Amino acid sequence: MSEELQELADRVVAQAHAGEQVEAYVSRDVETDIRVYGGEVEHFVSAQSEGIGIRVIKDGRTGFAYAGTLDPTAIAEVLAEARDNVAFGTPDEWAGLAEPDGVEMVPQELWNEALADYATDRKIALAKELERLTLAGDSRVRVDDANYADVAVESAVASTTGLRRAGRENGCYVSVSTLADDGDETQTGFGFSVGRSPDEFDLHKAATEAADRATRLLGATKPSSKRVTVVFDPYVTAMLLGIISSTLNGEAVAKGRSLFKDRVGDTVASPLFTLVDDPTNPLAYTATDLDGEGLAARRNSLITDGVLQGFVHNSYSARRAGTKSTGNAVRGGFKGTPGVGCLALQLQPGTRDQAAIVADVDDGVLIQTVQGLHSGVNPISGDFSVGASGLVINNGTVGAPIREFTLASTLQRMLLDVVEVGGDVDWLPMRAAGVSLVIRDITLSGA
Image (cartoon, rainbow, N blue to C red; front, side, top):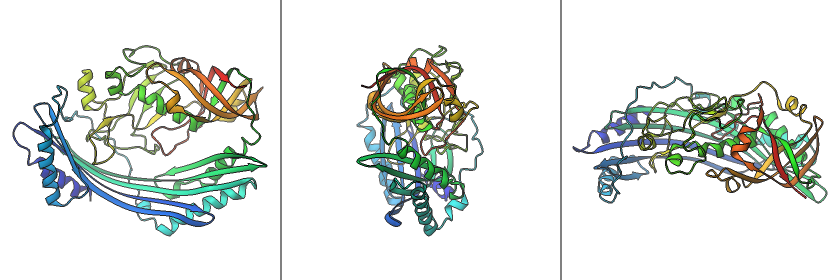
């Protein structure tokens, strides 16, 4: 099927007129989304979509159009519309398509035939089993919903600059949301398991985590204000890395919207902090062999031993910055043009699990959840202020649950105050992997 999509893209590019650049991006995807409640299927969607997006660039002006069909007549109309839209574009000296850069694709097993052939009734059975296992763990736990989701994507890109690549990938995950009751109090939790195939799921781990997250916070109180060492749970760390990724975005840097502008080569974090964007790691849920413009995906070191190495770029932001693309064009499908962003963030892990890490903390908090992360963190100034809940750590032992407090610092200070990175890597259905992360001297504002 990928060859068919490639041929469609090639035919569009072959129609380019003199003096114009043309890019055709063709994709087809199939998604399954199942939600179970009370042992019954509450929601089931199996959907397929396909379409083409065409960019035409001439004299620094860009025109774009798309269609949610691969009918030849519609494709001809899309090309004509993209050409018409060039006239309405604003001249941009950096406008242009990506060009081959000689970087070869890293061979990866991104397509799993077992998932492609997995029967629907078995997918439903997985969600039901996850719900059953979660309920069996603790009588105080209720399941809000248990879910199974998968996606399979095939895409191809061709351009007049000489790019011509196609690929396919699929993946799946299960998740469960929980509620824990104790008298008039209710707390929430969740658990995940991801894989290229359902055979890779660990349902027991997802169920146990979902129950533990909810029950551990029962009886939580509001703590007194103080400065503490915090241990971020892997899921919280992954969310934090997502915020940090926005400060390492080449487009944001070019617009002056990053706290790391003009700081390449500076020490910006603890020597223990090494951050890479590595979509060539097949363990990452968002692993891929191609970026959104058809360049080979690659491993990019962003912060090494605390020193800022650089930023991620697509071809446009790279031209604007006077550098080369890092293979980080991101695309939400055929309906849009490429943006720029990290593809699969990972911290270089340490060696110890969370229990061993906590055992060395005298006075701290294990942060289980945060609220308002996107609104409470300023990627330009670095100001950090978010609501949180978690468990008190006293003399190396996890103790009472606490909630309704605020963590306050700056991203700059937090990165420099990292004192340990855990070895408990958690692969999540998002663009960042999680690990336990220990940061000292953060202000906890409570009662």
